[in-house]
Length: 74
Image 1 (cartoon, rainbow, N blue to C red):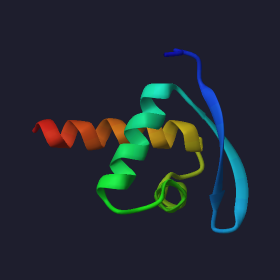
Image 2 (cartoon, rainbow, N blue to C red):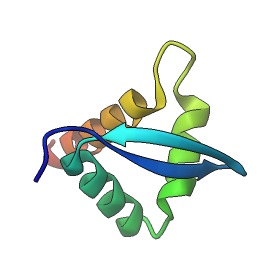
Image 3 (cartoon, rainbow, N blue to C red):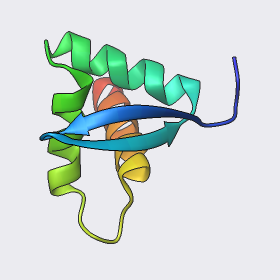
């Protein structure tokens, strides 16, 4: 497993973009999407819409994964 971020392409509402995340975040993000019965593109588009201008998409996805996992432990 690599600790370096890996770039993957996503399609957000018809627009292609690339996001770099570490393997652990990609795996967790895919698992969360699958548990919700959603595609990662759909979930990423939702995160993108709500992230605000001062937060990049990769950071917003990392925070989403972190908050999701924290909420399961509470």
